[in-house]
Length: 363
Ligand SMILES: Nc1ncnc2c1ncn2[C@@H]1O[C@H](COP(=O)(O)OP(=O)(O)OP(=O)(O)O)[C@@H](O)[C@H]1O
Ligand SMILES: [Mg+2]
Image (cartoon, rainbow, N blue to C red; front, side, top):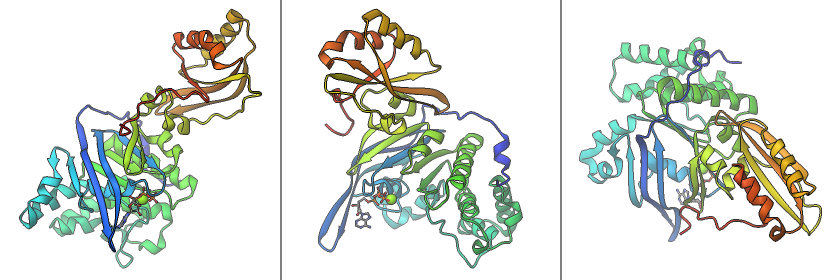
């Protein structure tokens, strides 16, 4: 394991209601060789101060485009991007004269890349100092700050090493230290762990989570791994075809009937044993108070209930469970028992009977 001083603090994340990243109607159309690709199709994103926000979605969904538009690495075709109260799109729209302001605003946004993007001819310390050079800081100030950041990410002993002498996880720690050089309020991370093995992935995620807690840093991260969302995110959004189709806090999502994200976060499997059966996914929070409810259901309505699958896990710091059960008879025959379960405060998703879910962005 990497030594990491940040690990010694068991702080809670303090999410406030203050918006720190807001996009409205964010649209990005790429035009190349006469072809147009709409990568973002009116994205309204709301990330609150102090939260870790995960964006997931299939390849090509527009995740990278979203993150690149948030820090204006990519110029949006339409819509607005506001970060820490500053309308970046308006700044960029003012042309070259706003260049300095935009650069300053950007220095308040840290960016971590999948392939680290370190300069191979510079030492670890010099890589971390790079943004500080661009900000015109003195040599002494740069070196003080770089060493402080290397300490924060647990790499003090590697200050004079070159990137080629580091492991993937260590390289990403340097990438993170460099992203923090401008004292950003927000950190953007595009698949920062996808080039790393599972163990290293976990240690980097814990580092991001610790930085979020220790520094009050807001983190917007893209991932294709549901485990990442489960382990570190307070909120998440699912992207499809350039739109956000579901979003919310992880606990809200888990309490949303028919949520695709919730089902992906918490997969339970098990097939119906016949046609004349009703299969329910029961989601519950806290301890296993469900079991008595299930046996009560069985007694009250004199029905045999089979448990097809169950999973229990910690999601966003809370115990959550999901159980797939089977009741004899079709859905129509089970309206009353299902009502009973819902009255007990359990969330019920009926397999093969998707509720008329009003998805965000699907209007
Ligand atoms: N510079 C570009 N020029 C033209 N089209 C682009 C450009 N960048 C992205 N696209 C297209 O925009 C769409 C969204 O791409 P984007 O990279 O944002 O997806 P993604 O969700 O990050 O995918 P992945 O998970 O594979 O990284 C895709 O159809 C992609 O081909
Ligand atoms: Mg991408």
